[in-house]
Length: 115
Image 1 (cartoon, rainbow, N blue to C red):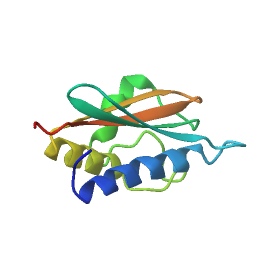
Image 2 (tube, rainbow, N blue to C red):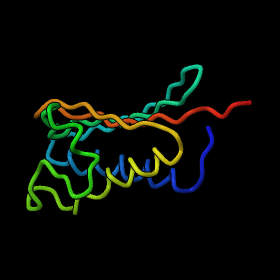
Image 3 (tube, helix red, strand yellow):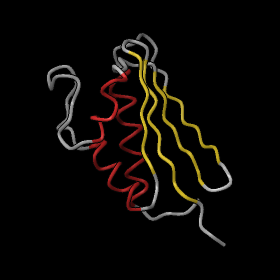
Image 4 (cartoon, rainbow, N blue to C red):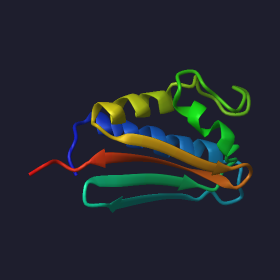
């Protein structure tokens, strides 16, 4: 996989969110997965946290967009917007899926370099 140091910020933000939103569980589970297709790498971070209503998944990557209160989970709402900005800069995509009370999966794709 290729990229620059800003891609570390992507993974840091995704993992931090997974940990933050699953801390209320008796046992927090965070799983990282990397897979590939012919044209891209796919990285996902899955947790067993509070999840979210999938109808609002598209809003999560906007700046200052939050589905939970500041009191419930600290943060200002720029982490996923930063992820989106970095991934788009690298020619990739972002996606999210969740179920309220059952966790969430956030992912990014990055194109493979043309050789």
